[in-house]
Length: 309
Image (cartoon, rainbow, N blue to C red; front, side, top):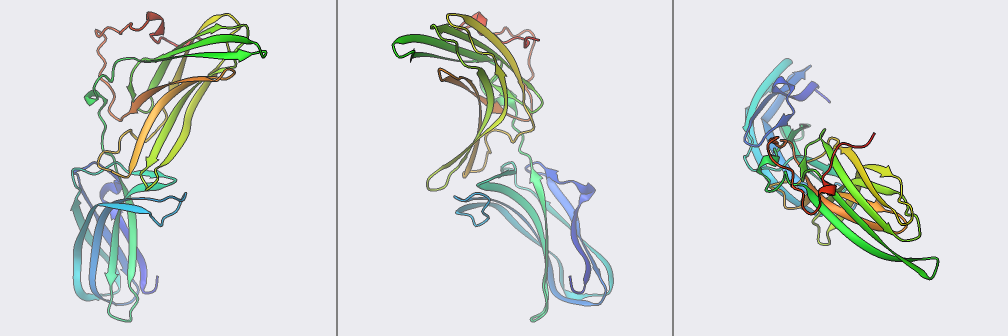
């Protein structure tokens, strides 16, 4: 580090997560063993998004900047040996997206500091990330507390000459959840054939779209549960639960390069059949009223209840 024995950035109260429109503050800490001549000491507060067509590549194909603020905390002078502290404060913009990091892009926020030294002298730079959480209130999403339904019917052949029909129906108790909340699923399977089905699988899937010239779709199974198949000619009801783990919220409001979506997929193997239920992941949960009746359409048998032990 040359003449500098310490050169770092600290945030007030060690706070690293902020909301849009908040004031953030901190200090640049410098300790020198000898005198250091400088032309200026500047602090930068920056927010941007970058995406790439290559995984884990920081050479972005497309970028967008949300803000870039500069504060000069010291003009031309000499730092004597010892410890020095330069406070800073920035007001974050009101409309900025939540921090996000994925394999093909990220939304990042950071504070940087640069010591500009005279010509032919070594300059010094440091940086520290911080994070923005733009709250998504599920109570503001239309129809979010209604159950979500999906159904599919599939005709298939087996044993070369025989045919059968399979109907798969599923329902979630809500259309939006927060991390730590339980997704309750109710599924009906009608196996109108002479062949047993394969297992049934319920998956919570994240879909991230990176809007490069040719969009890149990154699909990840976040959590899943498995149930037994259905015997030939039988009807079965399957009730299961999935706990939502810590996840980025749906909809990165203010970002035009990255979209985040979630859905529940219930699928069968042999024959292959699947239905999907779009859901919203937020960070302010629904204020559910116990007096609100649970819709029964299209069928009361699809209203989720507690998972079977």
